[in-house]
Length: 238
Ligand SMILES: [Zn+2]
Image (cartoon, rainbow, N blue to C red; front, side):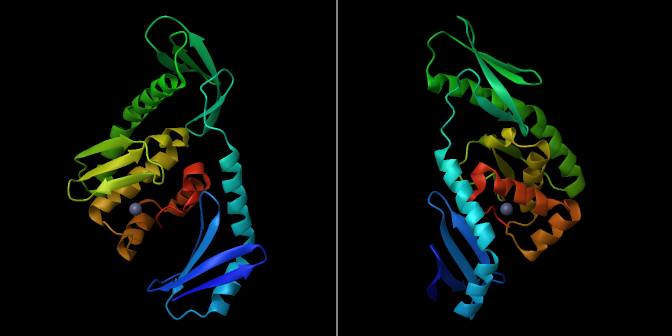
């Protein structure tokens, strides 16, 4: 069963399904709004719910629009770049030698060969991101293997557009989005724990939520923070 709710200039597509709770989402890139409600929910009830969330909807839409305006990084002098949740200024040095990246408390210095392309600069920074993650992820996995009593056969770092992580239950490995290097470290840890718990319970079931509650009680805050950051225009798995 489907329907549409109009709230001023906002149009909300309503679907009714066998779900427990109402899910309201604002989707990129244009800020389309959808609402999934439990079977049998009357449209007036869904409408009242949407009205109560109007502020949130407008907020999400504003963020998406701001994001759309945000230009992709150019890897040029004095550009802002994030690392572990902190903003740094980029400094680009052109030297005829092996490209490298280093950082101090306020600056990230990218050293590249003269005339290097944007693609090359991006690749060098990506490699650096991967090395930063490889430096911390194994210890996090070991820590949580002991706590959760689960074994991870391996992990992969991947650039993903819509997800922070993933897991292959059968193979026993997890995937992590390389963009996590830009977020505070505790958010990386949350994603590691979340994906590792999927090795115990593949679905976002009640059991999964109970496990999260027990092992990572602040998961809701972590999830909300991840959902606020660019990737998460789409609400991350609950
Ligand atoms: Zn999940």
